[in-house]
Image 1: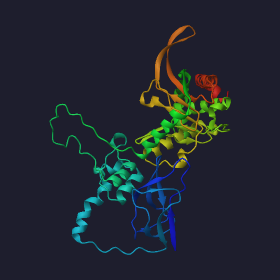
Image 2 (image 1 turned 90 degrees about the vertical axis):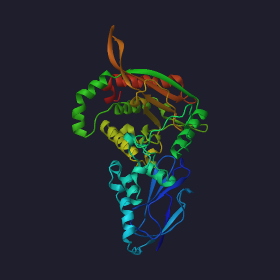
Image 3 (image 1 turned 45 degrees about the vertical axis):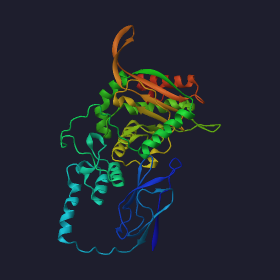
Image 4 (image 1 turned 120 degrees about the vertical axis):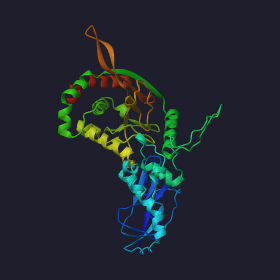
Length: 401
C-alpha cells in the first residue's frame, strides 16, 4: 500500500519551509517514526518522520525546494522490503572507510544526538564543516547548511602558510542571511514600523532575592534537581503584575484589543543562529522549580537545534535578559503581536542610600518597552514599579501580593 508523506501543518506565522536534507533515497528501507527529511523554516528545523515501515518509493521534492503545508514530499510503499545491496569491491570498501569513521572523530563527539545522526547517515566529515556553535562546536544546523551548500570550513589559521598582509587591503565577504536571521530582521522592522513604541526604566535592589537564593538555594536544588536562578523570580513577578495591569498582557488586532486571561511568558533564548523566544504556557500556574526546569529544557533544546514550532508559538508577554552578556542598559523591542517586553540587565554593586546611610547593594536596571497605542505611560510605569516592589520584597510575591 502506498502512503503519502506530506509537509506537516505549519502555523500561520510560518508560510513555507525549505527542503534542507533528505536522510533516505528512493529504494531505502524506512522504519516508522524514523526521520526522513529535515525542513528548514525561519524559526526551527523540522524533522518529518516516516508514517510506517516500508520502502521509500519516490521523492517528490528535491533538496533546496520550497514547500508549504500539506504539500506532498514523498511516497512510501508500506510493508515492502528493500532489495539487498550488491557486495562492494574491496577497493570501494577501502575508499569508504575514512567516511565511515567521521562519526567517531573527536570533533563529532561534541555533536548533539540529532547532529550525530545527520553526520552518520550522510557520511559527513565533521572536520570540514564550519562551526558556529558555542566553543567551536558543530551544530545540526551547521551540518544541514553544509549539505545544502557543500561549503567546507576554512582551514585553521595555524595550518595555513603565513601570508604577508597586503598594504591597504580592505577585504569583504558577502554571505546570504539564514532564514531565521531574515525572519528576525523582518519582525524587527515590523515592530518598528507598526508599533508606537516607548520605553520606561527603573532600578531594582536585588539584595533580598540574592539573600534568599543564598539561604535556600542548596535546599532548593536538592529538592528539585535544578538551581534557583533569578529568572524564575522575574517570571513570577511579571505574572502577578500582569494580573493587576491586564492591558500590558493584551494585544492589538486591527481596531480591537484582545485581553488574555492567562500569562504565556516568552523567554528570550540566544542561539547560534539568532534569538528565539520559547513560551512558558500558563506561567501563572507554575512554581519556581517548574519555571527553572522549563527554561533549562528550552536552553538545551535551543543549543541542540531541537526547538519545535509549538515551543515558539504564541506568548502574551516577553522577558529578555541582556545581563547574561553584560548589558547594563538597553531598550528592548516589542515582539508583535505582543504589546510589551521586559528587559533585564546585569547586576552591579552600586552605592545607594538606605535609611540615611550610603550602602552597596546589588542593583539592576530594568526596562519596559510597550505599545503606546493601547498602553498609557502611567500603566507601564506602575507595572514596572509593581515588579520592583515584588522583587525588593520577595515575600509579597510568594503571598501573591
